[in-house]
Length: 276
Image 1: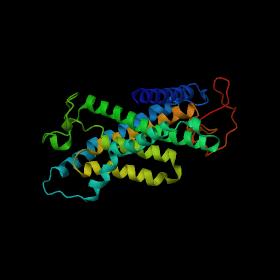
Image 2 (image 1 turned 180 degrees about the horizontal axis):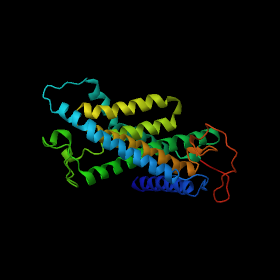
Image 3 (image 1 turned 60 degrees about the vertical axis):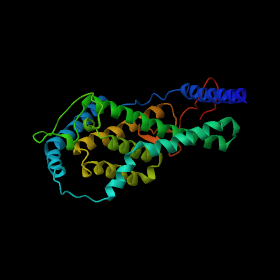
């Protein structure tokens, strides 16, 4: 029994390794880079920093004063909305899908069913890994910056920083919920573009819920939602360069595979024409 379980686990692991080796060997589409042109990157970063600075100087003091009012009230719906910014639910769903699909290897299916397996697996893998990586980087920034949350900021300050404290009270910038909300929103926008405004609205509401609940400044949530969304967009471009799940149209715009028809040479891997 133990030997049979060991053999099954080994085969399962080797199948996963083989799949990712196959994906890694795909020829790269070098027509467009992961990052936009250098001037565009500089402009976007400057605009990002300017927007955060604007909120820091003009919005953060107003919100902090409101948060310190003992009689402050807010719509209770925001206590529910903010739960969408937790990573647990999305990782549990996509992680379960990944495990179940990996137990039923693609070789068991033929034709259209094989393509469906690949599409479902890539959807789940992209979503899972995008949320995990954006969250880890967001937490790294939190620890590096160590901004105090509004309720732990001294009366005469808007900013108090204690880097590498690893405590809840010094984990304000960027907002983790806003980072996750932005990452999930853009992930779903890329995968289901027809519903983009619904997902964008949901992500914005998650970000707004954080200062409404008194646990973040407006500058925290702006930094988080833009960081999370931008990370996923760049991550999707890495996939597109491998023609996995996404691709580029003739103008370099990121699109979901199957949404547009491109005249591209066939993709070959080790001399074979198969592709996920």
